[in-house]
Image (cartoon, rainbow, N blue to C red; front, side):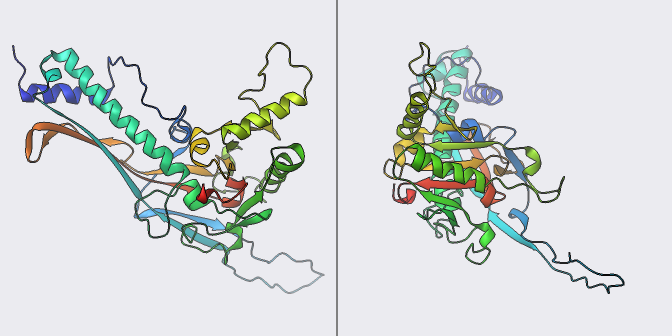
Length: 352
């Protein structure tokens, strides 16, 4: 019995629950791994929120009421607002897939129809992952970019060749609507390096790890992120990570029969250093090292809008086409920039 358009639509919508029986050999990837999708978008690093934007408070100082006193001293308690409020807007990403009910695959039996539509959905997911990687690492082109999420290099990081907390407002012009030039505790750590050696790059990374290792001043303080424990990772391009692995081998005589013993295992100060294919492909001149403390950095999705799929339905003006969309409303948030991020590079990563 022939399948009608409505039957095909119903079968297509069955695939929304799962990618089902799909069997494919995928050769779509342009890079070997997509760090943002595989590491950032898991249940431990995704947050959900509501409202017109993402807002959080930073406590930047105490109230200055602590003092040493003598007997019978008169009270002198002042009220001081030590908080600032940061806000970033929602950004929106969409993707879609479609088919024509007259295609040959749509007349091949229910099982093959399900597989065919699952393939279309898988293609859509690939497109979404590729864009997410670009969004996360590169981010907006400038303050006039009102569409791109607030990624690492285009928003959260600001290169400065001088070692110290010199990463200011960056490409977008503000951090959460505030100027880091005015609120200096919004600045992150930066440094410049020339060679991947113990006395140059490694020494600078040691400094960055020590100077950004902030801990709450009061035990059990209700400060966002700190209670999650430390989840620090250093990211860079493959040529730099490979050189670090060679450096580790040269300092260890007990290599045994494994000629690449430290592949994927190199650490500085017990913090793992990982290769990011996107950085390798897109930052070949600056060759940056990016330190991220994942207790401070999250993808925040608007409630109900994390990869929200619509059922397949007839497309306006093309009555034989069936289309399904996938939408997300989100942005990338760094609670405490001083603790959550640092940047070392040969040159400004925004220029490559």
